[in-house]
Length: 269
Image (cartoon, rainbow, N blue to C red; front, side, top):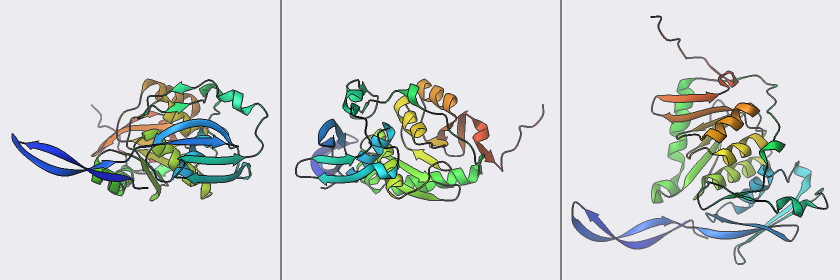
């Protein structure tokens, strides 16, 4: 299934009209089934749907380990993603009757309760970085999304260590992009406890719960966090960096979670 298509539009430039073809991001609805029971329908870009389903379920706390995931099957004709899990409690479906319509693009949904989240375990100490490395990672991140360059209509997420980008995902929804990234990392067996997550979108409470649930210690966004995301980050040990643009960024929570070896103290007055 194509992630983009072209549609005719009338473009007005300096009062002059012309007909052109514009490239648009594809949006589809897929139904996620767990053990043959419908869980939720998700609006998304039609790519890496297996990773998105796995990432969504990880972020909802339904997949405790790799052995619990038995199968993921995508059927584009039926617009379904079927996931088979083991070790689910007998009443697992009752846990998902209470849902929250999130602030995500396309009206995301979460069943997760932030009260069930565990603080991060910083057993490895702060992640050693530099301002220049953060700027370099952001430049690489910005160049990675071909679909955004074609359509201007998707969000991106990337996983990095303190040297390079490791994984990349994109979707019409910023929460979907994060789910795809988390799912890809899980399926690849990548440990997230010493990694950075980069996001192109606003960081709201439900995005931060995904980060915390998956024990990611550092989140960097080019845009803004919300008050709920800052509260969750502060309470659970996540280093939140926002407005990372150009030559500056803001550290909102847990600055000791990173060690910046090229930061200078302000001059004494």
